[in-house]
Amino acid sequence: MKRAEVVQKAFAMPLMNPTYPPGPYRFVNREYLIITYETDLDRLRQIVPEPLEPAYPHVMYEFIRMPDSSGFGDYTESGQVIPVSYKGKIGNYVHSMFLDCEPPIAAGREIWGFPKTLAQPSLKVDSDTLTGTLKYQGVCVALGTMGYKYKEVDCKAVEKSFASTPNYLLKIIPHVDGTLRICELVSHYLTDVQVKGAWEGPAELSLTPHVMANVADLPVKNIVSALHVITDLTLPYGKVEYDYLAT
Image (cartoon, rainbow, N blue to C red; front, side, top):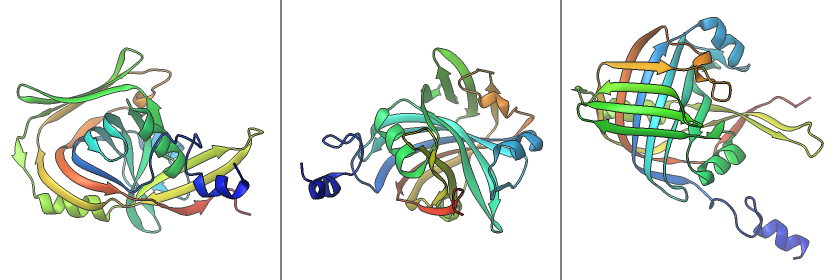
């Protein structure tokens, strides 16, 4: 294969059979359980990378079902998102993500810098309860429960929040000698958001310490709110906000 052909053909690894197709990526009937809780502000300051700053002593623990996603298929995800401030605007910093499907793990890490790790999350309805779990190597490290469809909330308000809130990621790619080649703060916005249903209600969240899935490092002090959302949306490409290696 000639050099020009390599450059023309190359999109993602591996060259001849990329793990995922080009984006943007459309999600249909994406379902969220988002439990917002209060945690230790000093721990957030140790975790959130400059130039981002923690906006509140809060963490959003998310369980997400994605039954229909273009290029990625059917999978489930779970992790922690931290409200942050950047240039005077409130956004979300994605701190951890655990999921059960290889293409979105590879694409998320390689394109945007999503901190994705292979694990076994789930989100389902058990009788009158919406239940989210995260298992890592057979150990349940997160258990979230919410009363099922307790109270409807304004879908348009949720749509606006999803579409207008920037999401931030720390993209890290090493060089072949192990030194940093890319270290960037990346941002993106969700687009074409169509919320089909949204509810709030009582919730509980339990996090268990685990050396390889350390979600409990941001401990739960008390539950602030819980939101259940079903939506269609598009994940587009992002942009570089800050280059940590720039001179």
